[in-house]
Length: 148
Image (spheres, rainbow, N blue to C red):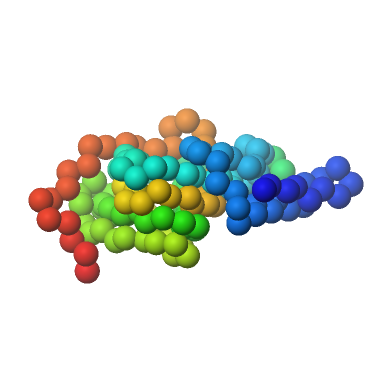
């Protein structure tokens, strides 16, 4: 299901097989890496609260890199999820529905997610999280969501 490729005591790669589907969030990487890899599986109705990413400098010893903002890519392996987009000032702007095979790169502004069908997705993000990475906020959604 998950395989690490190691040469000379050094992690070279991580493979996550298509049949991997454990519940909740499972991180495959340590905090020493500048990219974080996780599997996320949730049941229908789960809400991931709206949030923006704060300016937080991260230092990663393995790659000796520095990252200031966390960006994340989500690979939808199965199911459906609604993504609500917000401005950096937490104002609702629009929504999109993603399904099996879709990929999204979240770059700036805020976002919240609602699982519409049992979901498994892989997240690749800059990291590691250091504790005050996110500014969670009360999602104020209009009575009718916008889908452009």
